[in-house]
Length: 95
Image (cartoon, rainbow, N blue to C red; front, side):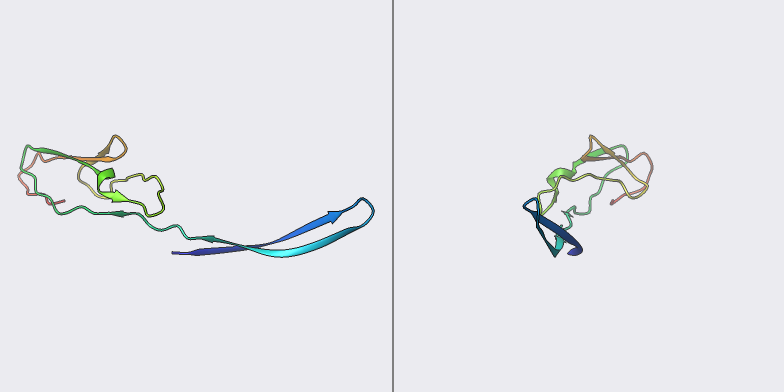
């Protein structure tokens, strides 16, 4: 999503005795694009543990560095860019 912010700038040029002013508008375009992450559904058995390197599955079209946050109740983010999960119950988790 492109965001625009504008501000007015006033500059003065002076030779010590006389001066001239100019005012102009500067518009800053923030065209940061959202990162993407591609993860297929997974299946894990009871007692197994899985670790997924999220940096291998995500990209940012602007080359920005990414951070990861777990939004949900299963698993954890480890080492800043890996998701880890261990199933200790008799449920099939496909998260």
